[in-house]
Length: 597
Image 1: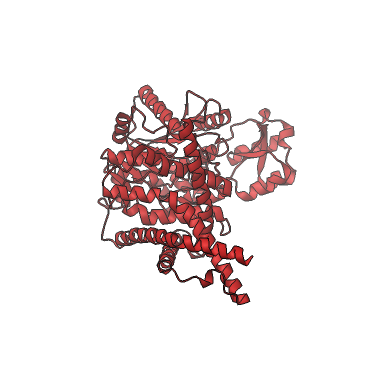
Image 2: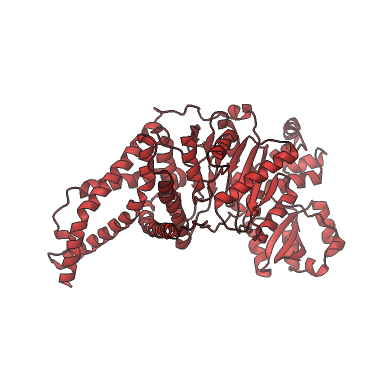
């Protein structure tokens, strides 16, 4: 055993010098960017166009925006995504174009159901079966938008890309519209939704996105690099899209690329388009950022990161080499150094663990062997010091977004991140080499998506009074007058109904739009009594809900108020069907309940 450990020590001793040198080089690289980010943060390098005030946002001429959402087997989340974002969004001149494939009937049906309720949602079906690549799907969505323009005599000034799991900030489109006057490419920050401390895999995304968008992206363009698209929350001017089409044989999004978003950032930089990353900033109490759930288990994270490494590091290198000035080459190096850094980081963690174990063993036994007896490596203390600075800086970025308690887990999550990234890099190298050898295209490695619960979405909901004004049911002056004359404890909405300013139906329509829920337009004779009595009487009377249809594995339920998680929990013991909630006015609901029950 002693001989084996001595052999291991000899190998590690041989490795430790080059490994320390790389860690030191990478640490100095990160320190340089950190100092540049600090310089930006303290205000010495300001945006050419300052962050907008409310007056600036109101004064900006509204552009017509097309939001592209490419899908493959996203029938479980796309309905919730569209419902919520339409209800929460404070911008008005936009349409959703949702891309699907002919062999994904469930997703097509889900989009059609939403499109029937919201005229601003348009289905775009690719002419061939899927999945192909996300870029290919986006290209066909673009063609569907052109057809829509031709048929309706309209013109979209900008395109914004999103995914099926995205929580679009209510102010995001207003900010993109504002910056669209000055830039061809606008990237809104992307942040992972907060998850519990022990959700290690998802916490890695929280850490990395908070750090990267606080440190790297604000200085990237300043130091000669391009701004990479995150794939979501990215706004393109039509002029930029036309340049992409001309330069790429009408391929706006490159179909062979697994990270077409990153590719487009580089292409637009080379085409001379003005780019901006909007700094992480709070507006009305929350960060103006696209929020989403990232993979929460190891396998899904490795799958997603394999695609990222393949597209960003390997395909980009293969397609573009090291072109551009010294500033751009530097950022290409930072994007691609993960090919070396990810495996070496895992190796460094393993050697550190081995060193701690052998040190403990030597201390306990008094033996001379183990890493404890190695002559100190001169580079190692500096490398370790830089890693500590990096960890502290990441912790500061995470604290800003998620709080100091969550930031305490940064060192632990960094070790798990090294493990996941090393596996993903190895797989990316293998897949890329096999594809090149066989001359086969790389296919879309789709990530499974989840959407937040209704309760978790409340932060982005607009006030019901805002929805009433937005729908044209009352004016702002009428609302202010009602607020001044209202007495008693009832809600302002009920007061508006009582005084005849709005009707029950109008209040229900506004509530349905706010909550992203359909309205139940049913008559008692259309409902089977067996279905209406499928829930216990105490549940129906206590929660004021009535089942009115069972179809396609779902139970359709009508009620007068938006459901919360507590209602879902109360219903779950009595049915395994998916709950599909619909709204009704109190008068119609009472009449329905009396006739059926």
